[in-house]
Structures are given as C-alpha cells and as structure tokens.
Length: 477
Length: 101
Image 1 (cartoon, chains in turn cyan, yellow):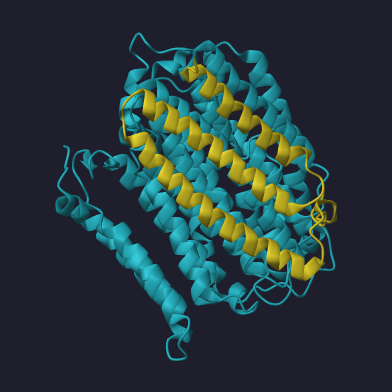
Image 2 (cartoon, each protein chain N blue to C red):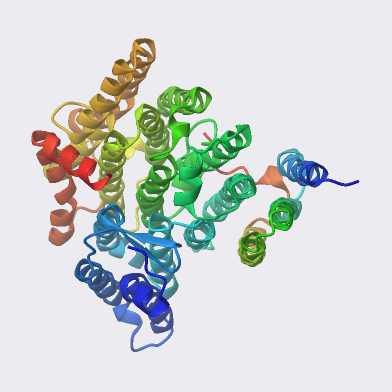
C-alpha cells in the first residue's frame, strides 16, 4: 500500500519522531541541576516507550510512506525490535561504567539515541537520499561519541581514524549511487532493483553495485577494508564499541537484503566472485591476526572481521528470496558479540579497565558463574556445538558445499579451527590459572541477571534452530 | 564539443585525485579534510551532470543534501582535530600511532 499523504505517513513514523524528540529532551535535561541525575532513567523510559509505540503501530502488510521514500513492513519491524532489545541491554549494563568515568551526561545518551535512530532510518529507507542521510546520521553521532572522552589520546586517535575511513566508505558508496542514478534516472531503491531485469542493464550497473558493496564492506569491516576496526574497538569507550559492533551490522544487513533481493545481479558471475573473495580473504586475515593479539578488544575485533567474512559468504550463497542464512548469521553474531562486550563492560565498570587478555587469569576462582557466561559466548563466536554460533556457521558451510565449492569450505573450516586457539586461550586462562586479578568488578545482581539473558538464548536457540530459521525466512519474503 | 563522457571522466579524475590525496598525504591532517571535501564535490558534479542530461530534478536535490552533510562532517572533523591537537600539540599524521598491533 502506498501512502503519499504526509499526515497519514507521519502516523506510521511516530516511534522514530518520538526518539528524535526524546534525544533533544535528554540533551537539554543534562544541563539542569534538577534533572541531571535522571538522564539514565529518562533514556530507559524513552526507549521502552518507543518500543511499545512501534509495537502498537504494527503494520499487517507492506507500507510505503512519504512518496516512496520510507518502507515499513514485517522485515523492518522485526529488525527494529532486535535493535531495541540489544540497545536496552547495552545501556543497562553500561551505566556504572559511564558513571565511574564521568561520561554519564546528556550528550552521551542523546548522541547514542541519534545513532540508533540513524540505524532505524537505514533499515526502513527506500530512497537513496534517505539511505545516505541515515548512514550519515548514525556515523556522525558515532564519531562524536568515540571522541567524547576528550582527555584520552587513544579515543581522539580512534575517532580521527574512524572519521576518515568512514567518510571514504560513504563517498565510494555515493559514487556508486551517482552512477545508479545516471543509469536508472530514479532514486527509489525498489525501482533500481527491478531495473536489473530490463534490457538496458549494463556493465555500468555492475560497476555501481561493486562501488556500493565496497562501501558496505568498509562498514562491515571486511578485509581488505578492515584497518579501522581494531583501532576503533580499542580506542573508544566500551559502551560505544558495544554499539558499533552490533546495531550498524544489522542495519547494513537489511540494506544489502534490499539491494540484492529480487535482483538479477545476484546471478552475475563476476559480482558473486567479488563477494566470495571478500568473504574468504576476511576469514583468513581475521583469524590469523587474532592469534597474536594481547588485548582482549583487539582480539574481539579481529574475530569480528572473520565473522564479517562469514556474513559475506552467506551473501554469496544467497539466492533470490532466500536470505535466511545471512539473516540468521547476522542475528546470531550480533547477539553473541553484544553479550561478550557487555560482560567486559560489566567487569571493568569500576575504575579498573580490563584491557589485556592476561587479566582473565584465574577469573573462575573469583566468579564461577560469570566465567561460565564468558565461556558460552566465546564458544558461540568460535562456533562450537551446543551454541547458536555453531548452527550459523554450519548453515553457511552447507550452502557453500551445495554450490560445489568444497575447496573453499575446507579452507574456511581450517581457518576456524586455527581460530579456536585464541578463544580457548581465554577459557584456559580463566579456569586453569591461579592468582586472579582482584580489581575486576563482579557485584550487581540485576546486571548479572541481564547479562545471563543472551547466553541463555544462545543455548536455547541451538535446541530449536529450525523454527527460528523458518521465522527469519518468513520475515524476509 | 563537450559531451557527457567528458564530464564523467572529469569527475572520475577528481575523485581519483582526492582518494590519492588521502592515501599519499603523510604530513598534515587538515589536508585530509580538504581531500574529503574534494571527494564529495566530485560526486556532486556527477549528480548534476546526470540530472542535467536526463531532465530530472531529483539529482540536484541530492546535491543539496550532500553539501549539507559535507558541512556537518567538516564541523565534526575539525572538532576532533582540535581535541587531538590539544593532547598532542601536533597535526602530523606520523605522530598518530598510539594504536597499533
């Protein structure tokens, strides 16, 4: 259903508008002495009420709003709910961390909500202008969030690196957009996609798609476009890292889905070769570089690069109307990495920063339950059975073998086995070493309860993956 | 006679020059900001050319959005550079090497 009337369109866009207004209210309330102490509660309330609102305005069929620039359907809603839930977990866990570093301020939460809003706009965009504005809204907020801790040299350095490389990515993507506009004479994504079936579809169309996917590879941090990710993970405050690692990935997955679904380019040999190369190269680079890291966030960054490679392999193996493997992989990876970084944020929420992997030594003697949670999440990122990560990796490998690419599948499996070393090293340190570090924070019953939600999900989804996969398949068609 | 091809080659050359400017430049961070501006402007020429030759106004609307976003980007970039300069007293790219590994 197409709604061109602006007032009618605004009706369906109320949750996003509410989020924007609340980000301004939070920014203002950070100034006044009276409201200063309630910023966190205000943020929590506004996110929960936006979630309730978008649940109330649930649409039954596909809606196209504001003259075909915004699309709302069950796909966008599903991924928005996931983003809301991940965001809630992140801000609940990060409160103490921010408080002890004097970062708990109005502008922090305001910018964080704007970044979330940018991701929502990316998810529901159906026009290249809106897509560009959503990407820029989320990345401009993230630059300033990384640099917010202005007494830290590494934060500013991470911010300038992220700034430069992210703009290069956006510019390459925009260059692709300009050629797409030149060929198709339209900025509406669904028209651009259906243009691929017409006879005029040329090599320039392929070139613009390649440019756009190089930009997306920058955003997913796929090798050889991965240089910024380890620096940003190390330099930015942990709650911001937590955001960068998960929610933009979900948003960009939806964009890739929108660009590739029902498009004849997916069968183009050269284009799928590009996706295959990016995926395999990224898995090799990520796993090999992660072996030599001494800092936990850099290790997680390189493991994230390897996992982005798997996401690209899932895109490679996707066919028309079947993106469920990629969707499942993105969801499983993002909830797992959120769990891992949330636990690290929780452990360093007192003055002490957990930076080195050695700090995990003997941790099980201090808190057996938390080290059990860390073990589950790390095993899930590694892809060990009994966790959701195993099932996601299995689906990707299965799709590769079905495409007669056994050699590639063997390389990927070998790299994953090599990658096991650095995950198991952390687990070894926790359970089989002595002299634990007493500065790590383990107090806070409610936070521990919130932290155990995702590991529980990781174990439960492994028992009934087919239902989840069928649901994602249903959502993405 | 100048055709659409000439314009397209021109804007592609501008884009390549600005990318080279970012990767070759080893001296000053401010030069990076200039190269970024040039990059976005070359995209703008591309949009204007396509919009002119196809008699369609939406491409020119996109140009306004890109200009506005480029202004916001340089504002934030300058703010980050100021905070970096306060900590390091230098804008040399080679001194930005605390994050390695």
